[in-house]
Length: 458
Image 1: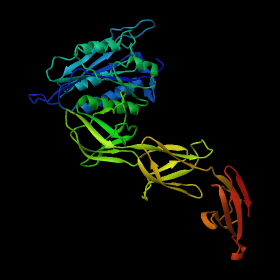
Image 2: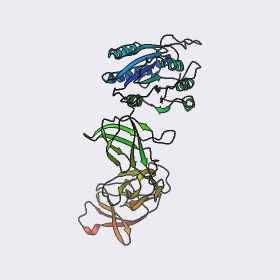
Image 3: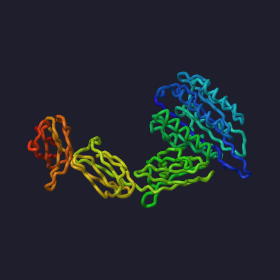
Image 4: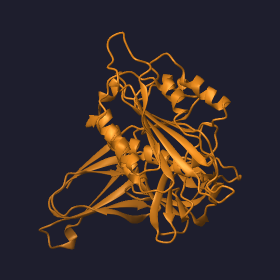
């Protein structure tokens, strides 16, 4: 298979509550289904898919080993029969390590994973079908299947049909699909089973795996609703940081996302902590002292109405103008953001002061940002002056309403570097360095026009 694809599908086979009616703690059973097909030997980043997947799953098992009330098991497929041209073994799936309450099960699974040599094909549907029988009867268990594979179904069977059959038996699904370089034509094959998550690198694969494991271990769920000015939870695409209120330690970092139904995606946060949530809008929005109710669906609310500010240089379409602007909240001296000209940026609804770092400076006060609208500021395109001079003191002034408005001083040493100036009338004041008389001051006036260069020799 010439595409590198990782799918991680998480199936919740049954749901209980964290605490049952008789106060017994629910047992969580994780069945890992691991891909041993030949395509897992393919190169990915600086290693191979199989080496990376082995390492990450081993690290995951090590992190789970000392958590109470968790049992683990391992099913593999594509690892017993070597694939050959025109021939594949679609029954190549086996429960290698059954569930056990003994901690030794973790070491047994790691040993099986270390000894795995990818050989065969990819019977996903059949592995899922058989896996439903891998869980012994239990009255107070949450049973989870985590399937890790590098490809789509290869045996002309339908994982979606298996998923439907499991639902008809009363088995509930909540899948996650992680794709690396996934062709969007494959998405239709998984719409029936899951939410698509992209893993472009090994680090992102590790992050998503950790996220899915956290969801498997907790049935406390959380939605973050970011409200606009009309009170609708429509704001999104901003990073959220969750801190432990007690010690201000960063615990989670998520990009706010709307799911395919257009509602905020569900997160899994540990209910043991009290949180401070920082929504990294401009400016930031902070919600403190957040307490989650265990085994419930929690909603965190924040008012984050946003609009756009577009800064534009007239006659220029390039984003790399070399001109930055300082954006501050109205009547505040603190820099909120440095925004490049010819770019757009979201800000919270309100009023802002903007300083454009041209020569001379341009100031725009009380710029209003409106909900879901774009406020645009346009400045004229600069012109250029090239000054050839000997060593000596030299300054440029803008002539405005009969006044000399200082623009900049030039380097004392000889200089011919071009200087970009806004269109307008200017004056240059210069005295040769070896001169000791004020009377030797040279004054020259010049005009700058957008897009043109003025050459001056002193």
